[in-house]
Amino acid sequence: MEKISYKLPDFEGPLDLLLYLISKNKLNIYDIQISELLDQYLEHIHAMKEQDMDVASEFLEMAARLVYIKSVSLLPKHEEEEQLKRELTGQLLEYQECKRVAAQMAEQMSFDTFVRGPAEIDYDMTYRREHSFKELINAYLNAVGRGRRKLPPPAEAFSGIVSRRIVSVTSRIVHVLRSLWKNKELAYDSLFVNSREKSELVATFLAVLELVKGKRVRIEDKGQTLRVKLVDGGERHWKSKKRNRQ
Image (tube, rainbow, N blue to C red):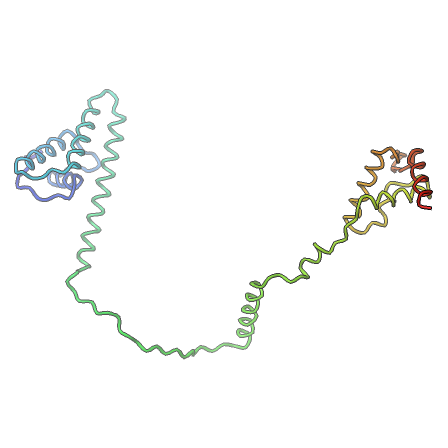
């Protein structure tokens, strides 16, 4: 590498200095010889100190970084050296691109020109477009629809939730026992024939479970059908309740 000149230009940072040295010595930025670049870099810093120039800490930090990369290159394995060199090359390429873009912007922009403030303009607010009647109708319907979507839902929207009939399990127990009192034995499916709503179906099913648990009815499997039969204890209990009512 040729000897650097000590008529020092100003550099904005260590990357700027490295790019200057690479360009001056016509080095390949993708394959930097760290040992040669380090010698030039350190000589430049020493020259800055001899001329009583302030050496920023970032320049010294970059010098330490270059020294470390050179030290790693002396080791038998160079994997870390290649990684460190790739990181440095990437930073140099990014900085080089930023400098190029900044130079282009500097050519296009100038702060010495006079810029006039915005002038007041009288706007013509006359609407001159023409629309068919179908477009106007669709626009009106869309506007009305958006307005309705912002309104709270009507009470009718909750009628299916709050006005649903509540069927108690106790009432269905009475219904099952009354049906069995007449027939003593019924098909299991027949208990659900007159049930119209889900709440009534569920209440009837729970009523049968309660009666089976209390040993008042029994479910028997007869072929392909299930039969519900009133047991003796359940029958006596039903008769005693009927007498009390009388």
